[in-house]
Length: 425
Image (tube, rainbow, N blue to C red; front, side, top):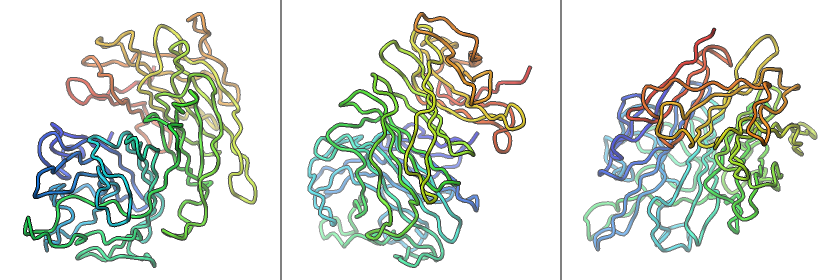
């Protein structure tokens, strides 16, 4: 399992390799993804505020490429000759004095939450898709960015010292003018044009997930609607079609998945058939729930989504928090969802994490529990063997082999970063 994590909130690391650093307390985690060439790109939150008279800029969501050591996060805009690496800022903690005309002028620390990333393409042209929740009152929304990066982009701004390009309306390096007060280029990363706001009017929350289906070429964002109190999902066909200012497609109207007080801690994954598997928390009874969505296609593009299944998985005490989901092959043409979930009722013990999967093929999935906190025997639920009590934090689950094969591996935060492998019987 590959880990990207913040060490002491000062260093950003990928399995021990230092990616970048800042002052203590400024670095927060994010997400990463690999393109078809196997090259990783990654994003993280640089939660830094230079509030003195000499500095007027703030930290941001920042983007980097390859798991190698880059300069300090607060140097990324500076045009030093030795900084020839791809790097980008995707949203300042303040829009004050922003060159693209955003009006927000206050400063909100830890402004961006739940940063997600997906990619599509190869070394010549990689589409980067980044989403996060912007909690600032004046601009609150789930925000989405998409930009091409690679060696053969037609709409391009050259990076210093590289033959790779980005199509955002800014140069990736050497972007700031000389500051006569500090006698150097301004510290901080500006918010470029191209910000897409997926939600509005508090019909959103930090509980959301993003998935990209490379077969159908569609990106999904599922989210908890804090205003209405339910789970919704929206989608964008052919996200790579076009470039900034000339994107071919736009986000579709949200589809309601579960109208109840459900949708927090949502996580999702798509399968080879294009179906969407979701796991989420229902606060009505503190349940873990599962939903299956099937897309409808018109002329090759997704034109609608149908909720095929919506069931209870685990209702014993309080379940369904800090969820993660993967797929596992149980037999020929038999790929099923596997969910890792946190039970706060067992918080502080080694038994708070559990994995659940259905005992039948997807088409025959039935509820694993009922509202009387009774198991039905239709799902298997196993406690994750933890060396130390797992924290109330994100969980990660994947299979160790290629595709959906191999042993299930669960990652979680505890006294240390820990992994647990579920071995076959």
